[in-house]
Image 1 (cartoon, rainbow, N blue to C red):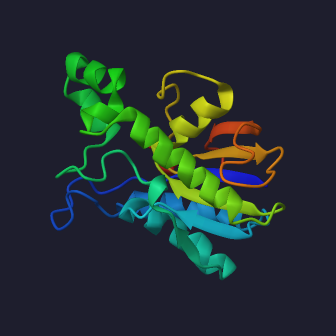
Image 2: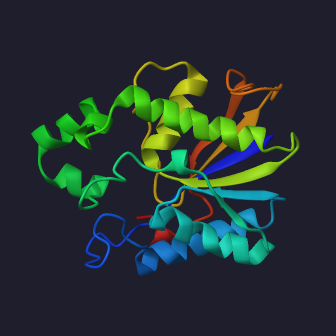
Length: 207
């Protein structure tokens, strides 16, 4: 199985109606269209998304292009799904070095969660994605920065969660080398083909 982890497009951090789960900004929609233009040519057979608005909206152009449904899996959600107001990594960094360091030291706890539980939820979502099959599926998963980090850290045997900074609408490619059978089967045989691909984005959509 091949899996493409797609980070959502840039959200509207100033959205008044849904401050906890904002929709995409105009440039975020442009990024989503660029993702769809690339992946529509790659034989995607399934589309999976986090339940959060910014991920689901990023998935929609590809779903329309391919005529595929978007499957929602809760565990692909970001660690901040229960906070009152979304804050981008750019905003967190702008709060100053001490606040940024507090976030990096334990990003899950920063949003009021538990690191072990979050990791289990994300890997459970990956297992559910794999188990839904088929073994030769090519799956696009629209998710968030921290779940992508959890999967990469697991695949590469890294202890900490945060090692990578996936850009908006970036693509990270995985190969499930041996899916096997049963819950969680194959999650110890993940090949990382690429991290943070952004070549599909036009220059004005990179930020």
